[in-house]
Image 1 (cartoon, rainbow, N blue to C red):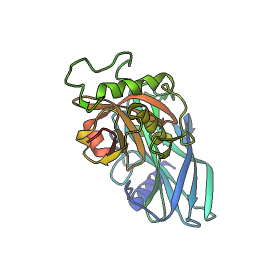
Image 2 (spheres, one colour; image 1 turned 90 degrees about the horizontal axis):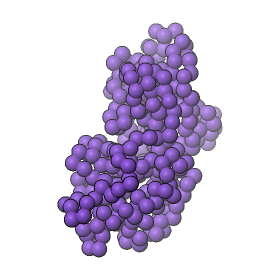
Image 3 (cartoon, rainbow, N blue to C red; image 1 turned 60 degrees about the horizontal axis):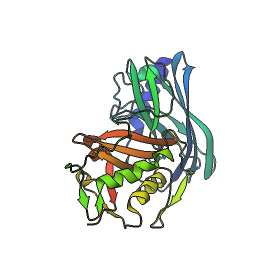
Image 4 (cartoon, helix red, strand yellow; image 1 turned 120 degrees about the vertical axis):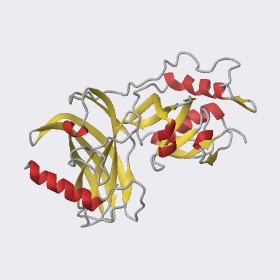
Length: 310
């Protein structure tokens, strides 16, 4: 049974040629994701990823849902035994679907991932994200990151707890070089206005795509983008926004769009080797204090929305 599954996995990996940057005429929407841990399937202990999604314009055509896995630094987990993997060697699990109708809803589509296929020992904070791929091998939907933990193969699905500092004090010191000014704005004042909202929007507070917000510039946003605009409006009021793609020029309070333009985060703090962020709709909740290395920010960042005057 394992050998059959192994050969099927290799065949799928060869046929799919997974990519994360294509565009298709078909469409899909991921409505809900939830996890089930310590599941046993074919004598393997692992996790089930449950997905509710809808699909358009793929009647009688076969597509795929694939889960890709990264560590807490957003680096891809790599495969070592050529089983649960993409064609370029990253840890993944997937399954196929064939809609019976032009518009089809899958209320509980399940992906199984054995713990041993993460090739890890000890305690690890991990994330997965989903791609939905159509019959032409085009990515038509990408989810936000979903957090889970494993400890020697026994996970604990908890609310996000990763912190880089206690936010009881401002990271900016008076008259320090880190207190950059731009007109009447300083990165310190921007930070303090945003962090004041942490009591209203605490870590672990439920936040999904059903949470919407109309920004001061009349942009209506939901999920991660909605939360980002809440913080941005608090810090910048009615100042206009502009976009740029120079990630190295990012500032505290800027919105960074990441992961093929599918996820918004807000910059809280900038250090020599990392950026500290706040974000909504990560594991269907709000998270303050996750860090992203400069390498990852440049690799996964698509563009910056800033409201600092030029």
